[in-house]
Length: 263
Ligand code: BTN
Image (tube, rainbow, N blue to C red; front, side, top):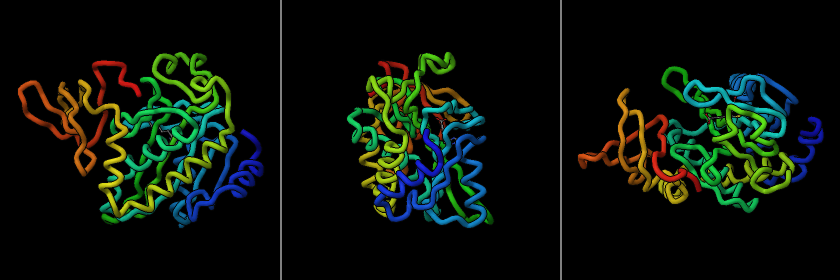
């Protein structure tokens, strides 16, 4: 990625958002953009403040996993301050923003519940939502978004079989700053409709590749196998088991057990 002033100037010249990315911190390298965004949020940074890193040394994933974040990826964390009652929509709206961003680039992706973005069955983007709660109040949320933009996943054995990147898909590289520009624009567009959850949930579920698939999931410590029938208005995944009963998976991970699980 280019030097800090280049990225900032590039984005500031082109961004037409009202708040997302208007305050921007770029770091050539850092531990995790989540940590930097959290510090800024604690210091009262305005909603929409974004942190971008050229690469992360300790990128974090969901469920205690790490996130590989070499140069050529987009690693960004955005400070949001949604009403507590709407915070459950952040995984849906963030993954939808990525889905729309890729569509604008000409790539057909799909969302794997709850918020992975896949291309042809391979993960191209992961999202980590972290919340700052105090005395039962949501002071801020941080939407951490990692997109594999310009790197050859085959060089990283730990992800080579399960991940892809935009450059692998397109056959050429593209400016990471352009991906950030589209992402912030789409994220703001969706985020400003947070008071209309049905619109967000509907568009999210329409583009979700998990629906209709056989899945395996952890349900309160037990593994369940069934068919994902859809999502409800709270964003939970509805899974029908072989005995006909229905389970609502509120959080966690699912494994798609038939097909390639991909878009
Ligand atoms: C996952 O798929 O498990 C979530 C991965 C989230 C990665 C992003 S990259 C930007 C931000 N900083 C981090 O350390 N993690 C998130």
